Image 1 (cartoon, chains in turn yellow, purple):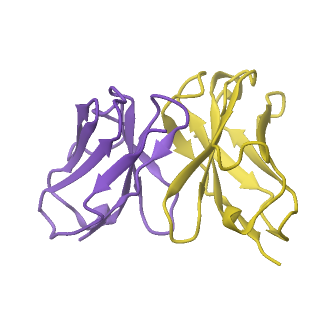
Image 2 (cartoon, rainbow over the protein chains, first blue to last red; image 1 turned 135 degrees about the horizontal axis):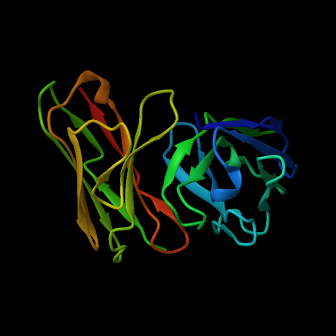
Length: 121
Length: 106
């Protein structure tokens, strides 16, 4: 069974930093691209960032480019999101999601339950 | 950026009714379009990929159609468990984007 378990969400002050993790299990992690998608309270889904299966290529939304960095450790079956210069509008539930292929633009076929990031003073 | 516009924003129907949800892209995404269902308090779930293919375990009452810029998700006979928000998402170009969602109430 595919499982994606996010962690690292917290209350952080504006301008602060946070590192999210996603522990993957139930599939061969190295064969799949991975993604982060967020959802602000009461709002829709927003794609944030994607990484290819091998980790060589990454893609990010304009809203987070230069502040957030996606990475993965294939030896530990773990996906990361480094978040810097956090702003109030980054407040959201952050989902880790699997792509159905090695390439980053694959269909997202499994989602974690999310980890909550709140940016507030 | 390819903008996806979903309509209607909300739909209130009865069990057994047919629901037709629309997703329109600001430029062609070919068939690189997927549909997701998000029930209250839950993570999204993949329903349809590549515009018209049902994901594993998805009931046959869900179907997708379209290509280019106009796409439709049809739920042929609504059940109470289908109450949810439905999102379309393209993956034809970067950045990937989601539509604003259609809330279906039953």
